[in-house]
Length: 88
Image (tube, rainbow, N blue to C red; front, side, top):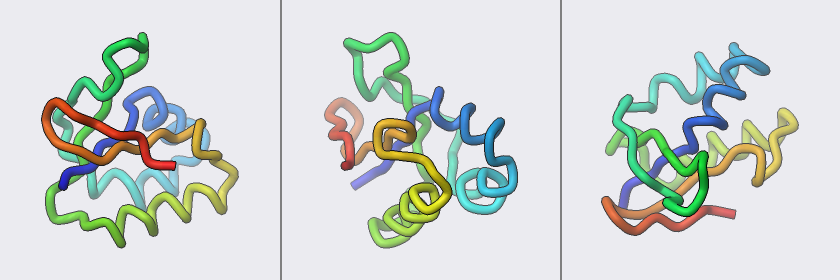
């Protein structure tokens, strides 16, 4: 199973919390983009490296939640190439 994070949310995180972005998220991103929500204008996601498992992804999300980012402010997805499901 692969993970992706919303590109617009990554940019917001980079601007609002640069240290958290640099320490927690940037090392995990591949730079490849995928269409996570085709019906939304901001439905592009950035793939997370394949070595990031579900436990590590949950830890990243928890750090973001503790620093004020709600689930709708930092959208994460789980899935494969064509089918993505938003994590709550």
